[in-house]
Length: 220
Ligand code: 5RP
Image (cartoon, rainbow, N blue to C red; front, side):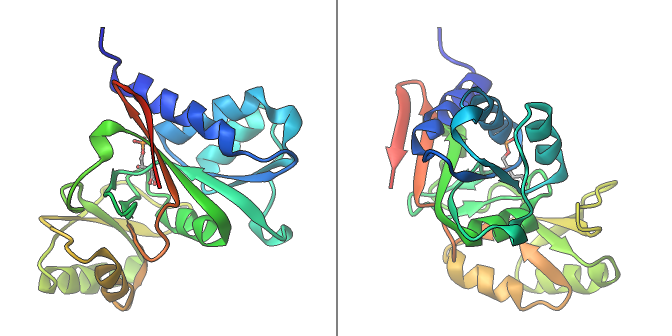
């Protein structure tokens, strides 16, 4: 019987444990795949020092397992960050932010020496953009940023009822085909009022662990 999507996410998440050094503080992402990783991390919590988290939701899950959570400002180095993605291409560039945690995810990823992306096989794409691109925006800049996104060829939609951990709003941009992700990421970062865009290309993943029907495949 074929594995379902959640089983593929769990397999990828469990494979990431092999990348966790002893005594490390581990960077932990957000979302359902990251939740499987947190649950796997709980089983080896005796051999790590603790975690740095990219969201309040993951902080709560880590603490529920008795894993110590550190402030990113209080640590010197972060050997590894493990997180999911909404889309990832073969260059290991991603769209992230489906769970609205993109800003903290990008910050933790920037500090990490190694970014391990864990995903099921539905997330692998040739061209980024079918998944609506999340953009975190300062609330008073919402209309301005939306107009600029339309100028760049997108169709932004306000994510109703969502306030990020940083007190901001999310615009989800539909209708994109992102041919040059690093260039597009830089362009979006220039729009006044954008806090973070969900293109992760300038700091892409170093390793992709992809849960497939044929087992977990590793891309570097
Ligand atoms: C949250 C994210 C997640 O990594 C992304 O949405 C994937 O989520 P899931 O593992 O639930 O499919 O970027 O902001």
